[in-house]
Length: 119
Image (cartoon, rainbow, N blue to C red; front, side, top):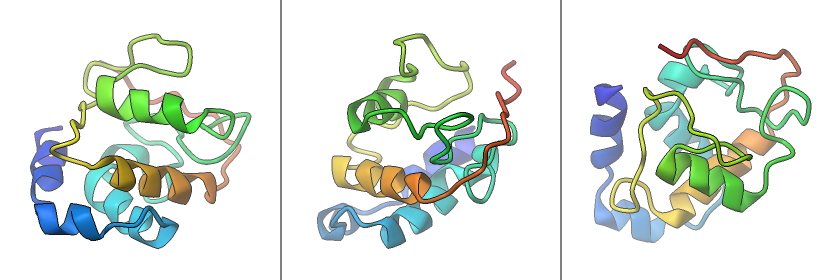
Protein backbone atom coordinates (compact mmCIF):
# COMPACT_ATOMS: atom_id res chain seq x y z
CA UNK A 1 0.00 0.00 0.00
CA UNK A 2 2.93 2.32 0.51
CA UNK A 3 3.46 2.38 -3.25
CA UNK A 4 -0.07 3.71 -3.67
CA UNK A 5 0.59 6.58 -1.34
CA UNK A 6 3.91 7.29 -2.99
CA UNK A 7 2.36 7.41 -6.43
CA UNK A 8 -0.43 9.66 -5.19
CA UNK A 9 2.05 12.10 -3.71
CA UNK A 10 3.84 12.30 -7.04
CA UNK A 11 0.99 14.47 -8.34
CA UNK A 12 2.19 18.04 -8.48
CA UNK A 13 -0.05 20.87 -7.42
CA UNK A 14 -0.11 21.99 -11.07
CA UNK A 15 -1.59 18.61 -12.06
CA UNK A 16 -4.32 19.05 -9.44
CA UNK A 17 -5.21 22.52 -10.66
CA UNK A 18 -5.45 21.39 -14.28
CA UNK A 19 -7.72 18.42 -13.57
CA UNK A 20 -11.27 19.27 -14.58
CA UNK A 21 -12.96 16.14 -13.23
CA UNK A 22 -13.36 14.16 -16.47
CA UNK A 23 -13.31 10.39 -16.86
CA UNK A 24 -10.26 10.32 -19.19
CA UNK A 25 -8.07 11.89 -16.51
CA UNK A 26 -9.85 9.60 -14.05
CA UNK A 27 -8.56 6.54 -15.87
CA UNK A 28 -4.97 7.74 -15.61
CA UNK A 29 -5.41 8.66 -11.94
CA UNK A 30 -7.08 5.31 -11.22
CA UNK A 31 -4.29 3.42 -12.98
CA UNK A 32 -1.56 5.17 -11.02
CA UNK A 33 -3.28 5.15 -7.60
CA UNK A 34 -5.83 2.33 -7.38
CA UNK A 35 -5.37 -0.40 -9.98
CA UNK A 36 -2.67 -2.26 -8.04
CA UNK A 37 -5.32 -3.40 -5.57
CA UNK A 38 -8.61 -2.93 -7.41
CA UNK A 39 -7.64 -4.31 -10.85
CA UNK A 40 -7.14 -2.50 -14.16
CA UNK A 41 -10.84 -1.59 -14.50
CA UNK A 42 -11.93 -1.70 -10.85
CA UNK A 43 -13.08 -5.31 -11.08
CA UNK A 44 -11.37 -6.28 -7.83
CA UNK A 45 -8.20 -8.04 -6.79
CA UNK A 46 -6.66 -7.47 -3.40
CA UNK A 47 -9.29 -4.73 -3.08
CA UNK A 48 -13.02 -5.00 -3.74
CA UNK A 49 -14.89 -4.56 -7.02
CA UNK A 50 -15.40 -0.80 -7.40
CA UNK A 51 -16.86 -0.73 -10.90
CA UNK A 52 -20.12 1.03 -11.71
CA UNK A 53 -22.07 -2.19 -11.14
CA UNK A 54 -25.01 -1.58 -8.82
CA UNK A 55 -24.97 -5.22 -7.69
CA UNK A 56 -21.24 -5.87 -7.20
CA UNK A 57 -19.54 -2.47 -7.30
CA UNK A 58 -20.11 1.13 -6.27
CA UNK A 59 -22.77 2.00 -8.85
CA UNK A 60 -25.35 2.75 -6.17
CA UNK A 61 -22.98 4.91 -4.10
CA UNK A 62 -23.32 8.67 -4.15
CA UNK A 63 -20.36 10.86 -5.04
CA UNK A 64 -20.18 11.87 -1.36
CA UNK A 65 -20.01 8.21 -0.27
CA UNK A 66 -17.20 7.55 -2.74
CA UNK A 67 -15.34 10.64 -1.50
CA UNK A 68 -15.72 9.42 2.10
CA UNK A 69 -14.29 6.02 1.13
CA UNK A 70 -11.27 7.63 -0.51
CA UNK A 71 -10.71 10.27 2.17
CA UNK A 72 -11.54 8.41 5.39
CA UNK A 73 -11.75 4.73 4.51
CA UNK A 74 -15.46 4.20 5.20
CA UNK A 75 -17.99 2.46 2.97
CA UNK A 76 -21.45 3.57 1.85
CA UNK A 77 -22.89 2.53 5.23
CA UNK A 78 -20.21 4.34 7.25
CA UNK A 79 -18.36 1.12 8.14
CA UNK A 80 -14.56 1.04 8.17
CA UNK A 81 -13.02 -0.39 5.00
CA UNK A 82 -10.08 -2.77 4.99
CA UNK A 83 -7.19 -1.41 7.06
CA UNK A 84 -4.89 -1.64 4.04
CA UNK A 85 -7.03 0.86 2.12
CA UNK A 86 -5.00 4.09 2.04
CA UNK A 87 -6.71 7.31 3.02
CA UNK A 88 -6.04 9.91 0.34
CA UNK A 89 -6.05 13.41 1.78
CA UNK A 90 -6.78 16.40 -0.44
CA UNK A 91 -3.04 17.06 -0.53
CA UNK A 92 -2.58 13.68 -2.26
CA UNK A 93 -5.66 13.75 -4.53
CA UNK A 94 -7.77 16.86 -5.05
CA UNK A 95 -11.56 16.68 -4.93
CA UNK A 96 -11.59 17.08 -8.72
CA UNK A 97 -9.19 14.15 -9.09
CA UNK A 98 -11.33 11.92 -6.85
CA UNK A 99 -14.38 12.95 -8.88
CA UNK A 100 -12.52 12.02 -12.07
CA UNK A 101 -11.70 8.58 -10.67
CA UNK A 102 -15.33 8.14 -9.63
CA UNK A 103 -16.53 9.16 -13.12
CA UNK A 104 -14.17 6.62 -14.71
CA UNK A 105 -15.29 3.83 -12.38
CA UNK A 106 -18.98 4.43 -13.02
CA UNK A 107 -18.35 3.74 -16.71
CA UNK A 108 -16.75 0.36 -15.92
CA UNK A 109 -19.14 -2.56 -15.55
CA UNK A 110 -18.41 -5.89 -13.92
CA UNK A 111 -21.17 -7.68 -12.01
CA UNK A 112 -18.83 -10.24 -10.44
CA UNK A 113 -18.89 -9.82 -6.68
CA UNK A 114 -15.38 -9.47 -5.34
CA UNK A 115 -15.03 -8.38 -1.74
CA UNK A 116 -11.24 -8.22 -1.78
CA UNK A 117 -8.85 -9.89 0.58
CA UNK A 118 -8.74 -7.81 3.74
CA UNK A 119 -5.94 -8.78 6.12
